[in-house]
Image (cartoon, rainbow, N blue to C red; front, side, top):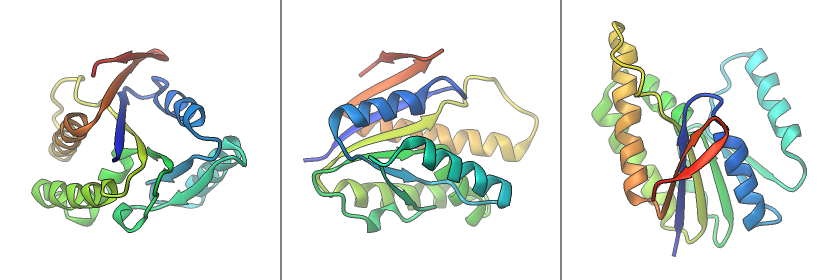
Length: 169
């Protein structure tokens, strides 16, 4: 049976560090499933730096959207992060929130059919009030909806505050 551990928090709140330490405490060789799209050469360098910082114990996989094609039987998998993953759906689906949610749930549910421990990281960006920018508001709504879905199906949920994990489920 799959186990889902959800880690959320603001930008630079310590989400990834906490999630990486948790993954390493559960496995000598965890999998790092990165969901970021490579936007340009500078961003590629940033990704490469992050990979080298993680160390050889990690198996690194980059997948922009279609995470359900992987079968991580009995592995520990860190998915980092839902925010960038949803950005890919958002742009590819011309900001259609319904289509984005449908596709993301299909991919996530497909992935979770394989028994493994999944540590899923996402940003909490909905605490800052309402923005004047329509596109930003739509994305905040989208991320809030998928974050609620993940928190609901998770076995454990943590929110990060200034590097301190607070278990809420």
